[in-house]
Image (tube, rainbow over all chains, first blue to last red; front, side, top):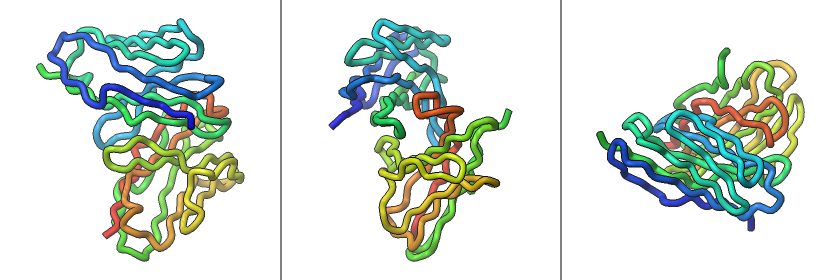
Length: 109
Length: 114
């Protein structure tokens, strides 16, 4: 079955300590990969869409990249306000989006 | 520039009661999706609707659950005869076009079944 897998499940960083989150997928015929940020008690907030291998997008301290089998969300010099759960998702068929379980990021000051 | 609106934000029901969750999509969006999120789990697709039409309800349990998106008014997710296992956060999302388009999420309704 098509799957979306995120790793690690949880990541604790010191402020300023850069790292990367991984999203691997087995969906055939990728029609976009989406990154969201979710804060506790809130709905997911859209961050990026990537459509083709080699594509990169940046927003403040975040950069998303895409290969044929996975995507990375790079966080450069994170701040405590970057603490959140980061979700990736891919369209499964014409109608629904498959979400990974997320990476829970904590950035300590 | 109102985003996706959901109400109520919190809903408490006793077993056997009915729960009605409402979602108003972003202005200009005609596609609505409902997802369920259980504690420590990812978002699970339930149903996809366009105005007056259910496009895909493959993720929604066949019994007790129904959804609608009338010509006028919000989309409604209805859960009849709730059970404790229905306790979860229910999120609505909307998009301008098809599922390949970015989906924008509401704040969710947290349903607790006593």
